[in-house]
Structure formats: structure tokens, C-alpha cells
Length: 316
Image 1: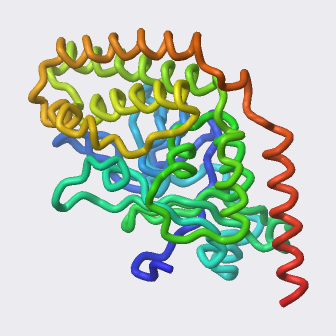
Image 2 (image 1 turned 180 degrees about the vertical axis):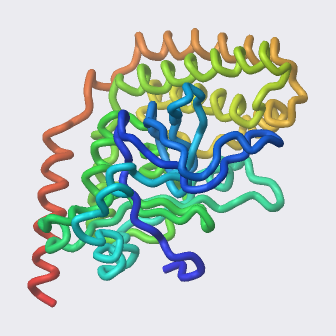
């Protein structure tokens, strides 16, 4: 275990939830919104490294990470029980069954000083899973760049062809894997389907539109984000043609880092992106992947894992 930074339990807050800003939020050089401002969740992040989008009562919109706000209902009435204490009592991080490295280290795009991003799976004890407290969908540490999904949540995201989850299943950098995790890895191909095209392609298209809007509005481009969007297209093409997620992209390292450093102009990067979209479409037409993932086998794995954990508990 990594004891340096304790993992914290955190649930995904649904769209429409009313929240309260915990402290003053600075946008640029201006303190835009003070502690106590009330807002509503407009969208939630795909993973722990991204932020929620929140609309405040004055109509303005800001991005907030989970530790920057509280849920209004809980602030007004207080929780029925201290669920955070309940989770802490069980020390959920000890139930991590799979730990791997993703991000720049796994992509082969790391440089000196690059962070080590760890992701994985945890299975909470049955008594907490069955209790009224419920279990968090993920536990995380912002300081140590770690995030672990509860098994069911992990499998559901994998069935949706979530790129972050598929990378966890195919990364070459595995630090810990239990019997249950080994069984899931042995069946990782069941999560690959034509949904990859819709998920990867659609996300890249929408994000490039945002980058173009930012360019027109500010004259600046988030080059690191642009690099990862190009990487996703390269990855998606390989998934459809090879039925495998190539997490490491060392062969494209120089070109991708040139994008990240802003060496290649916007027109050149956008042209590369459009070319990859065409290649992606061609791969989609010829792929041998099934129309949808194997939901039945994924469910079998989940039920088996739950029973396995109960058996271990009873035998201890």
C-alpha cells in the first residue's frame, strides 16, 4: 500500500444536485466566488483528475473539484450518519485488488518530473456493501494521483468503453493484481466492441470544438489536452483493427510531444486530427469487433467476485 497519502471515499455527485462552495474560488487573478455561494451541478467529471461544472445562482459557471464544495442538503440538515467515518473505519484502501500505472508513464510520454498516476479496482466488504451507508463508487487521493473504482462501477464503465478504464485493463504497468483481478484481466477482451468508435471519436470531436472556441476567444490552445486527444484517436484506431488497447504510444512520442509543446501549429494539428478521424471511420467499417460488449460475461464476473469475497470473509 502507499501510506504517504490516505485515500478518501468520494461518490459521484449527480447532475442537478445543489451544492455550496466551501471556500473562495479564484479565476485567473480574480477572486470570483466566495465561500458559501450556492450552485447546481451541470456535469460531472469522467475521473478524479477533472472537475465538476457548476452554475451559481447569479448565472455564472465555474469548475470545481469535489473537495471544493459540499452538498446543500447535507449542509442544511446534516447526514443521517457520518458515512465518511463509516468508510474510514473500514479503511477501504486495504480492499484494493488491482493497482496499475496509467498516464504519461504508461504512454511512454513521460519526462523528468512527470507524475505517476495510479488507478485500479477495490471491492468493499460485504457488510458495508449491504448496509444503509452504501459504498463509494471510487476512493482517491489527489495528492498521490491515485483513484480506485468499486468493482461494479469499474465494470460498468468498461462496458461503456470508457477510455480511462480500458487503459487500466491493458496497461503494461501492473503493480498489484489479486486472483479476482487476474480473472478480469483474462477476460478483458469482452469489453471491446464497436462502442469504442462512438466513445472515442465522439469525445475527441466535442473536445476539439472546445479547443477551437478557446483559441478564438483567448488566442491560446491547451496543447497538452490536444496531444491526448490525438493519442486517443491513435489508440481507438488500433482497438478496432487489432482488438487490443495499445496504451504505450512510444512510436508516436516525438510527434505527440511536439503537439504538447506547441511546436506544431493549430492548423497542422487539426489536419492530423481530421486525417485520423477518416482512418478511424475506415477501421470502424472493417472491424471484426462485436456490436456490443459481453454484458452476460461481465455480470458473471461481478457475481463470482462478490461470492469470492464473501467466501474469503467466512473462511477468515
